[in-house]
Image (tube, rainbow, N blue to C red):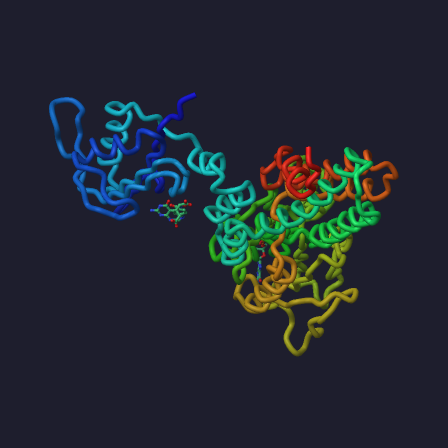
Length: 454
Ligand SMILES: Nc1nc2c(c(=O)[nH]1)N(C=O)[C@@H](CNc1ccc(C(=O)N[C@@H](CCC(=O)O)C(=O)O)cc1)CN2
Ligand SMILES: Nc1nc2c(ncn2[C@@H]2O[C@H](COP(=O)(O)OP(=O)(O)OP(=O)(O)O)[C@@H](O)[C@H]2O)c(=O)[nH]1
Ligand SMILES: [Mg+2]
């Protein structure tokens, strides 16, 4: 089937100083020549050209543009590709889009279609495509670094390296199965087992990463929890530096979970304010409390907010509901430090049940800097990039686990045929991650590496 020529605006919609249109496909060169009424410029050089409309009543200039001609395969998509850098007004954008559609019959590209073509043409593998998507979505420094690594092929190299070793092992094993009479080294099966064990161990270490790559993509999830009126919403607003949640002196103000995203020292964090925890007959509030507990269970870190005004009163500092949530993933915060009694009153506790307590005031901002620092430290500890690239998606994890299971099975298999089948599944699982699955390749190696002579 003939390849279509597609176009799209590569820059964000709406008014801007400059906008970029991309055209990719076999018609690109013809469109560029006609649109500029000029011969094609030198490849990969920006040149200034007037873009002409051939639409309607005779020729008319659409815009004064900068254009770049990328002949395939040395282009982003691997196809002939043109970039048109134009003025980013609504009128210029729509005039150009109309021209490309009506005069040249080009199709508007679907989402990700340029990148899809780059993948189909072998310019990028799937992990690099995902890295590119993450790079475009990156909101914090650590996310950008991780995405740059992946888009640059760090995961591909890791997985392709393992796959290559396993494909070699498989090629040897296949030869042993298909040509049992040939002179094959006696240590062949042990060598295959050794290769499988080595890959299995490496994959195990790679998987055992506390999900940091996935967490870094999604953001660390922090839930703010505690008794009604403790000042949870006030704390959220203080951390967000805006009035995101309603605050009132009435207990039971917050019902829905209110989420917002923060950049904590380069690490992405999703902060969730929740309903005050208490037993209640109000059905709506009870649903809010249920959601708060659900959020607590799902959170990477629980920020347990205590009401400092309870200090030195009969009211317990830690209420029964909040107490249920104290564990290693909890950080205790004593709020309303501004109201806590001075030298006459009881001293602020520095720890409760062996957990350190940070005194803050959501009202005055006292102690907030220290809290942000503590949260940043937790985020860093859970999300920091190691020296080795981290997997970033459940898709990778699932395929790696399948690969690992197949390797473990194959190492135990007595019959070479069964070993080979498991090894093939392991190779297949790795190949799925990068999108390079090719059985021909295995056959190819058998005949290239073992001169069987047939
Ligand atoms: N104007 C513009 N800016 C851009 C892009 C683009 O396509 N256009 N990019 C798009 O994402 C990024 C840069 N990445 C790019 C990746 C590959 C090729 C490319 O032409 N690759 C060819 C040639 C390689 C070479 O000679 O260096 C290839 O891979 O064969 C261009 C840009 C970010 N900025
Ligand atoms: N003095 C003082 N008052 C505070 C502080 N933090 C919150 N408050 C007040 O405490 C009351 C309750 O604050 P909220 O932030 O609505 O408390 P909450 O924990 O979200 O309450 P619910 O949503 O009902 O669970 C409001 O009147 C706040 O102004 C603080 O640090 N100091
Ligand atoms: Mg609230």
